[in-house]
Image (cartoon, rainbow, N blue to C red; front, side, top):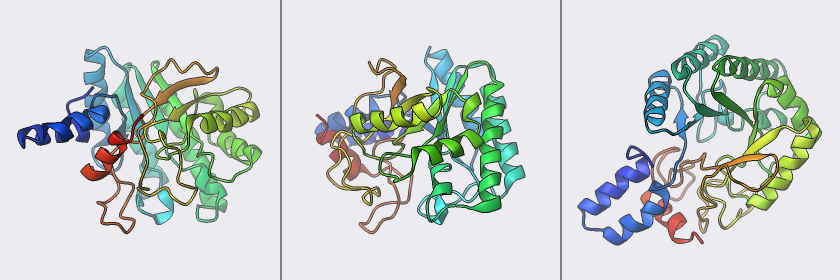
Length: 285
């Protein structure tokens, strides 16, 4: 575990306040390895520092690249690089920072899937996005020890697997190690595995990883993705999944970090929200 995650730091705060029962509950999150998200600010330096610390500890850092232009359809996690040239420079800097250290990279949650839904980029902008993702895969795979998984949505995104496979092919999946499913979502692992297997079959057997960070109680429905109540931590991160073609269960979304300000007094996307974190941990099986 890292002592620098939001959850780990919150454990320290709770202990200092004498709230030992809550601190013990939160350890269910803080004691597990989770991902380091890279966005607009300081990505190169963070990638360098985190991968260096992981290497020194004999571990492999897991990163999430999240800076694609026109990100998140202008919703709670809107933002990203201002243009294509900026993004290419950004991802090249991240790749260079990783050097020859071991790292796994989940590439641009929602970016491909949003090109196929009603709110995402279309036409020339979609073509530009596919090109940027393919460039990112190529840059990252120049590093000898970096594994790359292109994000491929989740089972609740009602998309034709062939359409999604075609979009992933345009986005450089052939050169990637595989794809990621259920990032920051809640679907149970069995359903994610079935979804991933269908997509894998359409992609010539590509492997995939599953975000199990908050899948313990399954989904509250396709429209309930923004801090839905009653969810729970899922399977612990592991590369021993027992499922052919599933390279790992990962905590890609950091449990307890908000999905956005969706109308119930939550903090902005990415900020740690203690009541929600405790709820996820208390409900875990």
